[in-house]
Image (cartoon, rainbow, N blue to C red; front, side, top):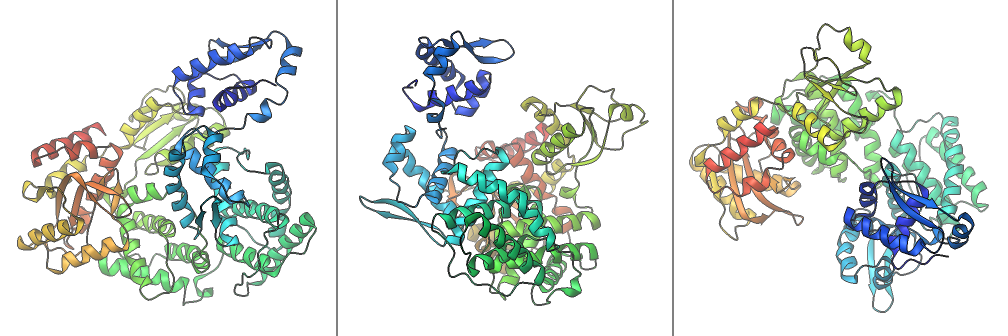
Length: 639
């Protein structure tokens, strides 16, 4: 068996033994520089020189394993690949691995042992533990520390299982490999059975789950089987009596789990499965069939609130109401039983649907004062998508006018779907209005979309053409982003609502409360707002931080309370603490009036542009309004 002096060499050997890879890809996988890759290859070749093999660099392929003496090499590497388990090289990978270790271990863990195993300092892992604790806190899980004993995960068994299932969903979206998990063979075997039988359990009961819901239930059932066999069953979980179809589906699933474990499955296990099915099922029901005390009441409240406070009337959109009630019914089940549904596009929703997000957040927060339930930010994000669609359907709102793209592809259906998915993730604000082949494109007299995205070179008609590969390079993404981001309204909005008299450089040590008091007082003295405006700004901030990201915060009131519309820009060179440990360096305090709200709402898109262009750092260096204005204008021309 070949011995490697440090773990990264073992991982590199394992990667290159499986396939030929260029040094750039090796550097990415191992989170090191290409120079480090070359140095490690030299060390590997020194080690392998006595075992009949070498790694050679081949043009167009990268590093490949060249074996001169197969018998000698095979004898030397016996057991080597099994010992080459991946070691987390980056902070994000270490955090994920720590999560898995705590969730999978029945015993206490010592950071020093993990530090020695991963060849990092104990201080490094202690820093990573802040993110680990924050992640566990979302599931009401905590880390108990005992001197000379170690650290152990404490919390409800239901929370541990759900956290594990969510983590598996994250990992599976990147790679189907489960090697990060302990007892991966047992888990893989359980997953294979569940994947084969779960659809039949649901279909026999006439149930349909969302894609994400089906994936979650697959992972959850496999995890539950393994946890039960390891001696961690559910014991005291109780829930309301489920409807017949959900109860029938759960009974089929319990029968499957009983066959897999060979032991009795408790009523608590069945009750929790019922709750999770209800929380993730696709409901094909009419509004009249829903209890008016939950889903229907909440949807009506949200739509009434938006109409009353923001003057967008969506109350008579029956499609929107039906879609929202269908979603809210399962959401209420999740909220009632504290089931966390991750929202992987929340950050994009907050940036690109800032207006709809604020509408929905304000309405839900107002409703929460009269409800025992707390609706999470993730759940609000899903509601925002429904509201955003309704706004697009009925109102011409600047920031919601999505760029329209025509996608031309000759690579087959699989290539088309891959590219579509990538483009949707990278540009959630863009609509692909149609897809076609190159021959179909050639027959067009004119293109109605804003631009064309093609996988091969085309003759340009009346719209620009961006050529990309099925997996676009950074350069191709940059070129496409220039087409997606074009918006001529931004310079106008900057000129209309930003002014030198509403620009300030915050003094050192200024707090958020001092900023609110000072700026709101100035706006009140100038007649832009009333005295009540400041209290509303504070209330909005207490509901959820207005930190947009990248050092930009956009505090504002609940509703349209200003007499006249203005944006007060505050530059904080030293930064101002903005809740949850965030630091704001560029603050835009918004005062939006009822008379100008429709046009002024496009201001939100300016902030999205600043985020997209990563302009915050340059804006924070401004010491006068003129400097700020020039930097902001330049970021728009770069878009």
